[in-house]
Length: 357
Image 1 (cartoon, rainbow, N blue to C red):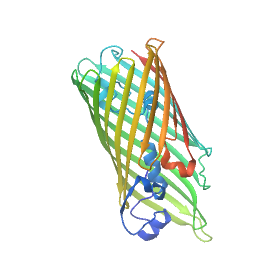
Image 2: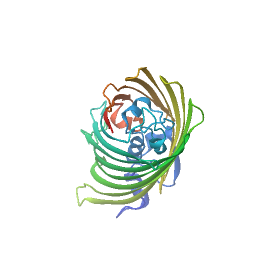
Image 3: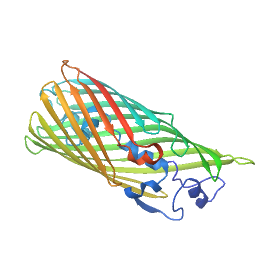
Image 4: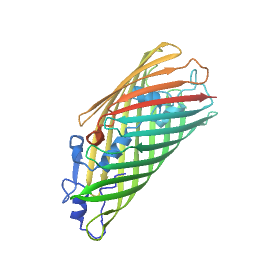
C-alpha cells in the first residue's frame, strides 16, 4: 500500500515524481521517525494504520496480547499453548464484524472468518480471512479515498512442552487504494493495486504459573502497481509507478496473572518500513488488563501509546454464559492516529461470536 514512494514515473524525472507524490525531500533518502509522520505520504501512513488492526475482539479490548496464553493472542505460538479447561476444545469457528467511524464522516467496515483445528499431540492449524472496505472516504482536505483489502492467513502452532510453544504464520494481502486529489490545482486520479506476502514466527513461554513471556517478529513484502492520470487543459499526463515496500516488525510482551480472576499484560512493538525513497520507524507500547468478576463475564481495559506521541484507549466485555459459544464486544478510541490529519479521530466497534467444538 505504500504506493507513493516508487522508483520510476513514465514521462517524468525522479525529482518530479517525488514532488507529485508529496515527499518533503525528493532529493535523498532519509529515516522518518514517528514524530515526523505528518510529512509522510498518505500511502505509507495508511500502511502503518492498517498494521494496528487487531482481528480478535477481546484483543481489541485488551490491546496487549503477545504474552496472552490463548488463541486470540497476536502471537502465532499461542494457538497450541493451553489445552486444559477452558481451552480444552478440539477446534473453533469464529465470525467477527468491525466498524470504524472517523470524526469527518469516513467509515470502514471489516469482517473476518477464522477456523482452527487441533491435531492430537501434533499441533494446531489455523486459517483466517479478513476483508476491509472504506465508505464515504473524503478527507478534511477534500480528497477522495477508496480502500478495498483482502488478507489471508495460514498458521501452525506446536506445544513443545507444558511451558513452551512455538508457531508461525504466512500472510497474503490483495488490496486496492484509489485516490482522487489535486496537484498544482489540476485533478489527479490514481489506483494502486498491492499484493503482499509476509511471514511471522513466535515463541510463548511460561516462566511461572503466574508469568508468561511472548516474542514474535515478522517480515512482509508489498509489491504495488499504481496507474493514473493528471488532467490538464491539454493531453492528460499519465502516471505509472512500481514500488516494493519492505515491512519488518518485532514485538515482545509480558503477562502476569496473579489469580484466575485477574490478568495484566504489556507489549512493546517496533515497526520498520523502507523503500527506495526512505524509511519509517514507529514504536508502540500496549497495556491491558482483564477481570473476571464471575466465570461467565470478563471485563477488559487497554491502551496504546506510540512515539508520535499519541494515545488510544479501549474497553470491552466477554460473555461465556452459553456453553461453547463465547461472545465478545469491544470499543477502541483514537487508535489510528497515523491518518488523523485526513480523517480525524477514530472510533472502532468490534463484535465476535465463537463456536467451540
